[in-house]
Length: 230
View 1 (cartoon, rainbow, N blue to C red):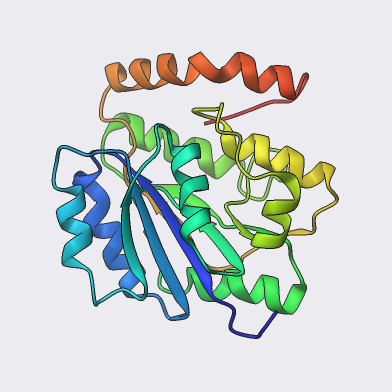
View 2 (view 1 turned 90 degrees about the horizontal axis):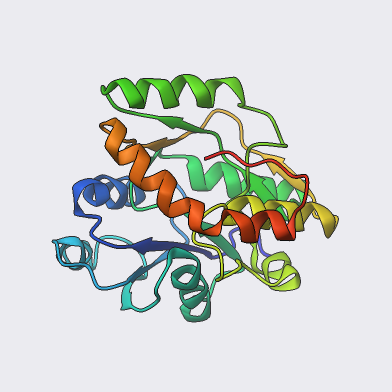
């Protein structure tokens, strides 16, 4: 691998306009510039696709595809359209600090990491956003709870990628398989992914938990005795 490998940033979207402009703007400000951005939208009815088009020519290798039924299948579709030696999965409601990609690439190139954990925090003024911020602060640095979303294409292909049967907990499923495969997993220091899309109210949490619950049995079938968090 070269010292400046191409990073394929793959973002599944669906009606993501509320926060997506900040996500794209943070990518435009990255200090590491050898990357492409593959947006895979599953048919948004809001301004998501228009936002992507407004950044064409600003963000390196930005492409928009309409495909997939869930974020795992969307990501896997994006992998098939990408060219990078490194794959980076981010949500459409994340804002990256300027050196996130630079630091993560350094872990792969200098430390020979197969996968990299990037610290996350929660942003927002709602009560539930503050709860999530406190929760996240309790497990920073805990390899059992945190999961990698930045990995080499080689290791991703080796372990079979994201499981398209999972609509949630896919990052933990992948992390468990990375560990089982003996992957070298490191973490960045001094940079953060800021999660903007925390719930505003209890009903949003209930709806999200119910939806994610439809796949939890499949996760535990694959990983009996393993824990999850979200």
